[in-house]
Image (cartoon, rainbow, N blue to C red; front, side, top):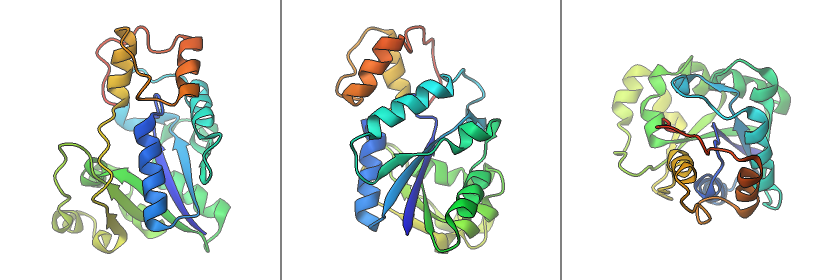
Length: 207
């Protein structure tokens, strides 16, 4: 099987996440995209993240009727800081060596990959799929190759879709009482309102 892996905080999951997952699945002819919400995202230690039970509940609501898109609680069950190398290794162990894994990330994340834990191990276990982000220049694979030898042959650079939707902006809009109906799936919006999430956001960092 050809499986995509989309990690993130998903605080909250939004239409941009869904559009990227569907586009990558169609473009690369993947059998399935697995959303993996982080338990404690180590790159976002500067802000409080919504408890994982809410984030995974919103993901399940968003993906309930979307064929080929599913959610795994792997990192939440494992607990502690969420490192991609450990997650991909665990998925590889569960799925077997015959499954071909594609880890989906924004081009900004790809540029920062040398700062991740054990990037060389990541590219041995899966291929990377980089999607464009607004304002993010095209990735310099030559510089990345110097930092992580072998990576240039393990990356798929996509030129679309460019999704200008931000979880940070959604949280700020909710706190300010502004509409987000066009940014999140209806079941997710109902959940946010029911549980009164993001009403006290104060200058949150990117999510």
